[in-house]
Length: 136
Image (tube, rainbow, N blue to C red; front, side, top):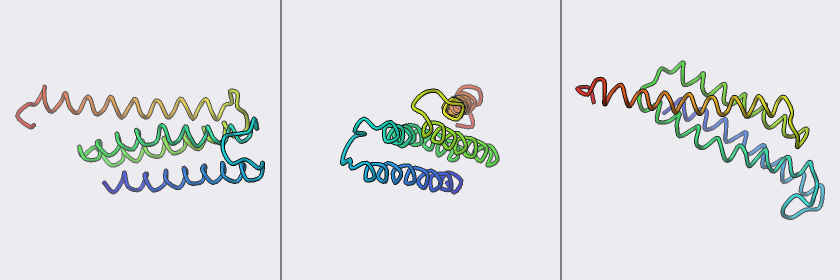
């Protein structure tokens, strides 16, 4: 659980940074709640919200993989790619509410990492419970 703990801490810092950005933009624009029709504030809110939506699921999958004794190098690969994906996504969404390379790459990489971890967990279940039931 040490590897997942490392990435949980890094993602906590990212989410805190995104939340602080929203708070600063709201304060600068005299907003208490919502985006007030300001595109910059709306983009910051979505960058924070999107991270808050996807990161917990990814960390849960990573934790179960770690508990299943998945290779540490693979867990780090998932964590690094996911962290870079979330940074690209936040950067891309911060520039424009429309499509941008950072947003597209970040979203695609996030979904691919989550998909890869989910498929690996399914494979681990099948391998242990169906192919090698004596090891379960």
